[in-house]
Length: 397
Image (cartoon, rainbow, N blue to C red; front, side):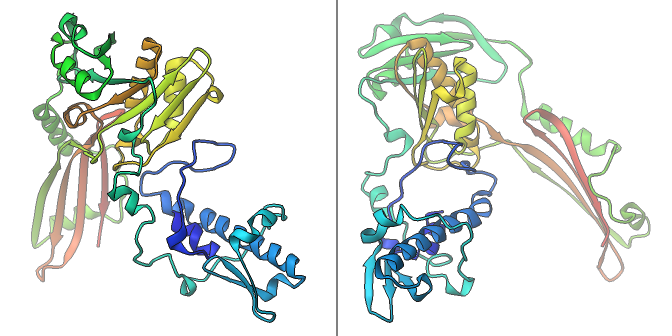
C-alpha cells in the first residue's frame, strides 16, 4: 500500500518511512485488511493521494520560481524546472506546499511509467523486522501494565463446574486471578509468571451443551449432499439431462475440515479501560470491529475509545474477528488496570475462529470422445451463523 502512494508521489522508495495511523473514520475511509480486498479498494485512493501531494509540491515550486507548473517535472523526491535548471527537494518545498490549495482532479500515471508498482523491491522496514526493532502486537509494552493469559474451556460446549485458584494466586508475580463467564484470567508482572500460574489453576469442566464433533459434522454434511435442492445458486441449461445419456460419468467428493488460521503471531491485544474512556492497541485486521467490540463490553460511546494498530505477524482472516479484543477489554474493566492479553500457540489452535468445514460433490458427464457435456456440483458447509447450510450450483458445457 505504501508503494501505491510512493509511485504517484514520485519519491525515492529507499527513503520511505511507513507510520501506522490509528483508527479514525473522520479522516480515512477503508481501514480494514481482509478478503483480499486491500489493494483493489485502495488502488485508486492511495495513488490519488500520492499524485495530489506531488502536484502540490510542483505548485509550490512553480510559485517560488514564477514559472508554470506544467513546465516542472519530478523524480526521486525532487522538483525540477528544466528550462532554468532549478531544482528543489520535496523537503525544501513541503512547508510551503502544505499551504497550497488541494487539487480536486489529478492525473495518474500510465502503467508503462510505473517505477515502483509491479517491481521486485525490498520492503522499507525489512531491517527493523530483522533486528527486532519493528513493533508487532506482542512487542507492545506499557509501564505498569499487567500481563495476562486466560484458561478457556477445553472443548466448545463446556463450562466451569468448580474452580480452585488458591495455588495460582500464591505464586510469585501474580496480581489477580479473575473468573469471567466460563473463562479464568491470570494477571501478573511477566509472561512467564502468568503462564506458570495458569498451570496451577484447578478447574473442573462439565458439558453445558451438546459437544461438537467432527463425526457429527461430516454425517450432517454428507446427508445434505443427498437432499433435494430448494433453489440452486446457479443453473445453466439442464445439466441433469446430460447425465442420462452420458457415455461415462465421473464423480468425486472432496472434504475440507475446520482449520485454524495459525498466523505466526498468536492473538494478543492491549486494553486500558477507565470509567470514561478506553485505549486499545494491538494487531488487528479490522480496527472498526475492535472498536465496536470494546463499546459493547464497556458501554462507552465509540468516540471515547481509541484504537491503534501495530504491525501484524500474520492475519489470514483470523484477525478480522475481535473475540480476543472483547476478552482483554472485559478483563481490563474487571481488573481496573491496563492489561496485555496473550494467547499461546495452543490457545490459538484450540480456541480460535476456524476456516469453515465443507464437503463438495462434483460430477461430470462425458461423451464417447471424453468431452465434458454436463457438469454438476453441490456443496454443504458449516460457517458462522449458518450451521450446516448449503450452497450449490449447476453448469452445462
